[in-house]
Image (cartoon, rainbow, N blue to C red):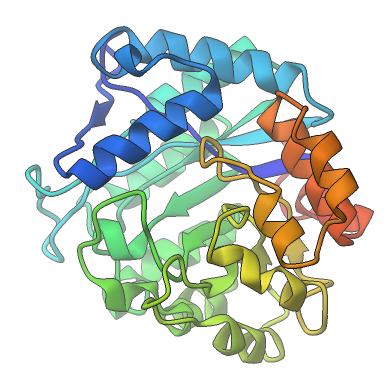
Length: 320
């Protein structure tokens, strides 16, 4: 049972180089809600967040039914010319940070994040794979990555050679500052798919807010063409994304979904209960579960996600 979507977060307090920029009141409020989900005080944002978050993360994963969790690094925002845009990005977690933290628990697997426009992108990809990376993660709409850009084809081909999947955010984004919302379109993933990369469309292109464009049907059409395209059900225990759960249980999605929590995004079964996906009695019992990883699994099982959903990622990741 593998969680393929777990975020590593920090403020650099331990010398990790991690960054967290909360410029808007919306993002500051959301950060406090996320810390409450983790079980940390709001004061951690300006304290030793690095160690507090990492210790708590490992504690929760070790105490969950998960056999493994894929820990995600987070790349900076770059221009199309490969220059860092330091004043834009909301978050940064280095590849080395993710690669080193997994040594603290056998349950952790590292996913790195590399902008293909970087001058050293191919070298960094090779280095990270040699160090044990099992996945590459990107948020195209936040990191300014147009995955359809032909200049990135050598990068996708190298990924296919290494056999590591691409976890790419699709659909709306609420937690981080968006650079270009058009880059959330899953059709832009056609190039890496044609290069032979196994692609996992995070959130299945669903909308995070009422006014977001919903790409779910687009993704379904793409799945009928690309057998190497999957989606994940991460970050969907929320007010608006939860309305798409029913669709993921039907064709063409039901056999192409992998499990992900999007930790530390809050897991509330209330929205599933309101939509009739989870009986109220089960919701009441599960809300007593303090471990968000366990609660997320239990709620999705109650909704009808098959056991294969939680194990499917195991055959998509390279052996390490």
